[in-house]
Length: 181
Image 1: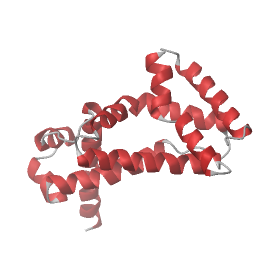
Image 2: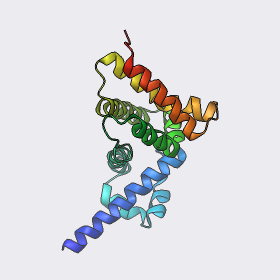
Image 3: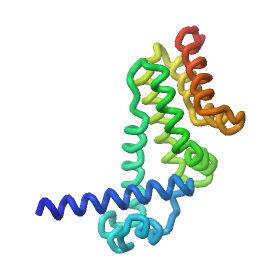
């Protein structure tokens, strides 16, 4: 009985991972169930048996993706260089997809829910990692570590990953020292 439950959980995790991976590759949540099933190595019927419907799968995949992103971005409190290294590495892996979702958020309420959750998760990360003294500093640190800051430096300016990290460390250090009012 325990082996069956473990196998079912492993299958569900493969399906969620496939859904998350395809969504990141395509910057979209409208992948056909057949594509998700194929990536997970299961049938469409198995996907539906585990999640009930396409909406059930998308809701579960959103929860799964959020937990994966939170784990990827885990950083030591107060260690600016390490936090910056982690967030830039996260953007190297997921930044382009995040930008794709942001470009679609005004046209699709489900994507808006994803991007709103992303904003809240990022703000919570800033508060946890940098422990800013007030809301104004929180806002500035959110901006300094946002995917758009990475995009401007890495994609638009074509700086190296290390150069981006150095610029963000400089910016964060100035924000943490200065009075934002």
